[in-house]
Amino acid sequence: MKPSKLTISIKNGLIDSINQSEVTEIIIDGASNRFVSAYAIPGIVDAHAHIIGLGENLNTIRLEKAKSKDELIQLVKEIDVKDGWITGRGWNEESWGNKDLHRLDLDAISSERPIFLVRVDGHAAWVNSKALELSEINKYTANPNGGTIQIDAEGNPTGLLIDNAIELVRDNIPKASNELIKKYVLDACYECLRNGITEVHDMDVHLDHLKVYKELDNDNLLPIRLVQYIRGFDGEYKRLQSHPYSGNNLQIIGLKFYADGALGSRGALMIDKYNDADTYGLELISTDELYEQASEGCDNGWDIAVHAIGDKANRNVLDVYQRLRSDGYENILRIEHSQLVNPDDIKRFSDLNVFASVQPIHCTSDKNMAIKRLGENYNFAYPWKTLHKTGAKLIAGSDFPIESHNPFFGIDAFVNRRAINEEITWQKEETLSLEDALNSYCYTPHLATGNSNSGSLELGKRADITIIDNELRQSNTIRNTKVIATITNGKLTKHL
Image (cartoon, rainbow, N blue to C red; front, top):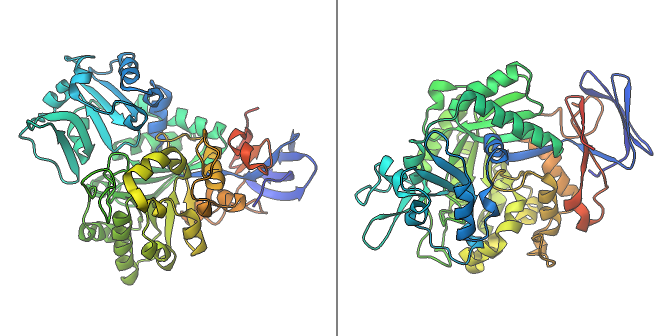
C-alpha cells in the first residue's frame, strides 16, 4: 500500500473503476473532481479514540498547554463554570519542574466551587476540597476496588485520585444535556473528516450517550463511520444495550473492559515493580471476573476489547483470551494499547488471533516518562515490529483527545519513532515500514470489525478515500502532510 495518483470512478458509494493516472481524479456519479499534485490512499481509520472527549476538547480550554503548575492554575481560572463546577482535562505533571499536586493549590482558585481536573491520560484526577466534600471523601473513605485516594502523612486526601477512585467524584458532576453531547459528537466527527479520517473506533462509550448517537445516525447526520465499544465492566449494557446494533454510519459491536491503569499515573500493572516507585500498579479486574464477563458478552454476540498497558496486565488478558479460545469462542478479541509486552507473551497475539490495538504517538510523547517508570524493562515497550514479525495484526489509533487526532503524527511515530524535538530514533529495531504503517491505519482496522468491503482501493469496495498532498516518501515530512479531500461512502468533502 502506498499513496498513488489515480482516477477513481464512484457509483452508488462504491468504486466502479480505478486506474493509474498523471493527476488524481475522483469521478462521482459522472461529476469529475481533479486534484493536481495529490495522492490517494484508502480512508484512514482511527482504531482507538474517544469522540465525545475530542468534542469537549474542541469546546474548552486545553490544559495540556500548561508547562508548569502555575501556568495550569492560570488556565483553570479561565475555565467557564458550568452547573456550578469547574472541570477540565489535559494536565501532565511530567512536563513540570514542580510535580507536587495538592487540593490546596486548587482551593486557592476557588474554595466555594468544586474543581475537577482529569489528567491527560484519563487515569487520574486532581480535585479541590469542595469536590471532596461534595463527594463525601475524607480520611475515613476506603479505596475503591481498582482505585487509589492519595493521602498525606496525616491520612487526609491530597486531592489526587487514581483510576476507579475518579468515579467517586465524577458521579456527582451534573451530566451534559443531550443537545450539548450532539454538538460534541458532530464537532469531533467533522474535525476527524478534515484530518482524512473516515472511520473511528469509539472506545468506552457511555451508555447514557447511545441515544444521542442513534438519533444522529437515524437522521443521517454522522459524516464518518463510528464503530463503538461500550462500557462492559459494570454490566449495565445488559439493561440498556443487550446486543450489538447496526445503523447507517453507526455500529455498536463490542464491550470494553480495563485490566489496569496508565503508565503516567503508575497504574499500569507490572510483573516487576516500577523503577521509580514501590508499586506494581493496579489490577482493575481479576482474570476470573474478566473471563466471566467476557464470555457472557461473547455469548450475546459482542466482540471484546480490553485495555492493558503493563506487561502483567497484557499477560492476564492473554490468559483470559486463551481460555475463551479453548472454550470455542471465535469472537473478535482485541488488546487496547499493548504497550509493555513480555517477550514470552509476544507470539500469543498471533497464536490466539488477538488484535494488538496500538497508539504509536504514545511512544514518542511518553518516551522519557516510560524510561523513568520502567528502567531496563523499557526494552519491552511499544514492540510494534516484534509483534508484526510474529504474525500479530496491528491496528493503529491515536487515543484522542489524550493525543493529537492528526493520523500523520501516528504514522510518523511508526516510521521514525522519535519525538518532534528529537533527531535520534528510539529503539529503531521496532520501527515499521511506511507500507506496514499505512496498513495498520487503513486496512487491518477493518479486519477487526469483520468488514471485508473497506480498507483497499479496489473495484466494488466502499469508496472511503483520503486525498493527501504528498507520497510520504520523505520520512521527515510525514508529520507535515496535508489532507486535501476526504471521501466517505462516495461523498466528497474538499479541505484545501
